[in-house]
Length: 368
Image (cartoon, rainbow, N blue to C red):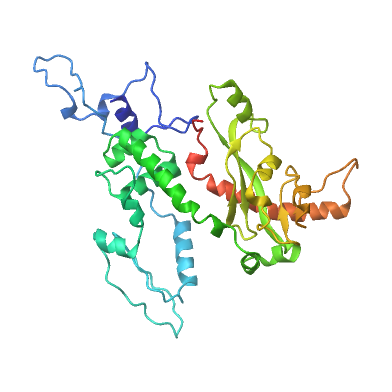
């Protein structure tokens, strides 16, 4: 019942970014309860709440109306795309406002198609969310469809929602939520793992999609590498504490190497290692050193901390990293200019990692 109150109140702890955990001195005002939440004593005694009562009266903020700025942006985008003749499908739209926009003389009227309203079967035909394998999982939940189970799992990954929140949202028990998430995480792992080879595109494909400026300066770049760390709870085992301690983050972490193509597509993800493992050690244990990964003359772009030139030298693959002083008091002007060019391109992998961490599950402290 305590958990239901926490979810109903919706207060978030600013430090943990999770549901507020009330203390012994915290109280909830009577104005948040309805008359039916109280016992009918009939003797004029002080009103008391029913055991199953949950606060339900709150003045939560409603979504704000569209601002003038966003409205101008929407209209501008509409004008820029006025020559697009693809049919647009609108699903479950409550209100559509049509603006009169200037059209070119040769533009054709947009053909309308019947809307699909509240027809799950039709929507499934138009948007295939899950394949046949999703209907034959080890753990089968009759309370939720496979689509809803997948949706529940995605909410967990995106918002790092607590199981109690999801249980109330989907009207199932917390244990069911836990089993669904475990089942689908494993299912998605094995399904997506089959695409692993497709993540590593050919050099021909990379060059076709390489930005022009990148092509002029670092045209042979196959992958841009950087490491990212995920905080975990302090292990109870002393040896595990030492191995997972990150001297960079000053906490216990798991470390993963991420690689992207010059146009920003994720092309490589290593296994997760203990936080004390160096970037070089991760590469030594990775598939990046496989003979079929690179061709002679190609290059890799990394941070200064990933010193791996000798590891790829046998394949005639060059590693682009910012220059080191090597006993000099300062870098030469040519080296400074080159380092700036490398830094301006290598920053994209950090942006991709930052984008991935908008999935809040990658920011919370995980259990080891």
